[in-house]
Image 1 (tube, rainbow, N blue to C red):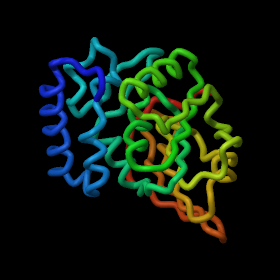
Image 2: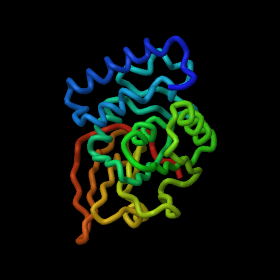
Image 3: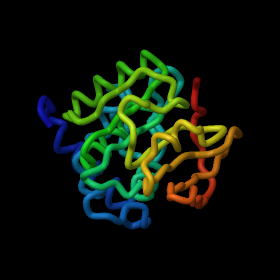
Image 4: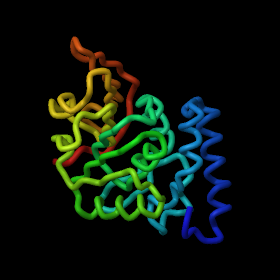
Length: 215
């Protein structure tokens, strides 16, 4: 990555260990997704004060009382999304930009919404540092999706949502996939939705904990 200092090698070794652990746990399985995790510098997304924690498997605090999701959660959701190079993806909740940066290595284009101006600026800065040039951060209410760039092949929601909003389903292509932590309590259920010509097919992948979607 351009502009990195002498610590680059140290961070790469940490990143390799993180990825190796996720592979061993069965959370990373797809070769191209493994490659993306190795290429994206997670330490860029938590701020300099959190660099030493960047490759541990836990969330990292970022501005505006939000977090960078733990690596195992990003891995699980990315695998469930089944990203393809041709895909146009909508992310709800930019946060630090880390999930969008992972997807940027795997798909054609990522649109990501963020309601917090501070976080939108933070994500844009991080994505630029990481060289993720096919990601567009939109300052918007994520519950409304982003109609200007519809339809999407995939939608990923990276914050707890009380419902699957109609706007998301309307903006998703038939045959498309939507992943979201569904629920309004401390814990939510990780839901996988496939949109078909006849309606939606929903599967539950267990309990997760995300910060709530803000509107």
